[in-house]
Amino acid sequence: MICPFDDWWAKSNERVDGQVQKGQNSIIIQGAWAIWNLRKQCVFDGISPSLNGVLEVIKEELHFWYRK
Image (cartoon, rainbow, N blue to C red; front, side):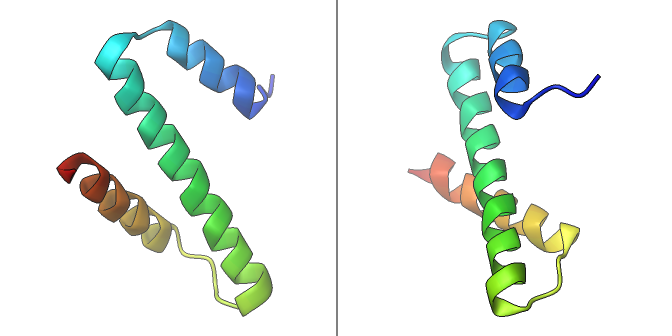
């Protein structure tokens, strides 16, 4: 059965709390944003999709977020 994204996110949040939940939510938000941004670039800028590229963006952004 396919689970909608928001249902999956809510269920995953039920399993953790506090700082772990905040960290998990940051990772989920960053991942969703990176995928959306890559899709936008593919559609409007004509770039080729790259799993390694999107994973690198996620890693760099999360590193930046946690350094603050």
